[in-house]
Amino acid sequence: MNETNGYEEKPTIELLPQLNRKCLLLVHTLHGLFLFVPVLLGLWAWMEFGWFYGLLVWLVAVFAGTILLSKLKLAYIPFNQHELSHSTTAILKWVVFKRFC
Image 1: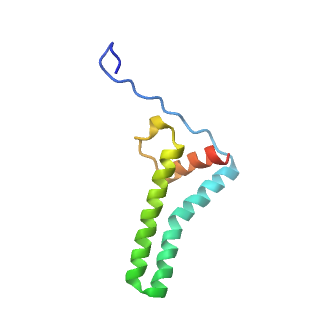
Image 2 (image 1 turned 30 degrees about the vertical axis):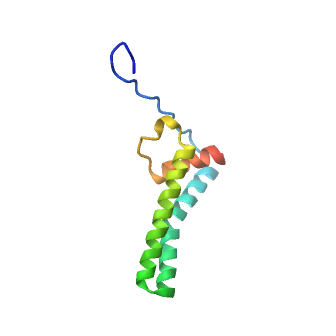
Image 3 (image 1 turned 90 degrees about the vertical axis):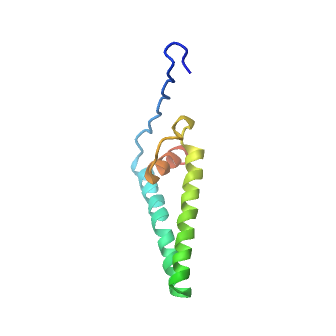
């Protein structure tokens, strides 16, 4: 806490630099995987075992993807931005920027 005015100073937000086309393609590919893999797994389970199991497999896959995104957010987004709300695309941009580009 700042002693002079009694208010906490806001943390500085680190902005993500622009990504090149190859990195953006990787971001969009990963985003598509996070969207469509649970659907494809659910459809597969539906065709093999029935609609109830398809729904359960889809739900478990969505939960697993959400947990994975949460872990990626904690690992790759700067600490002072952890409490901010980030979309799937924003999290994946940070991951691709710090890991691959």
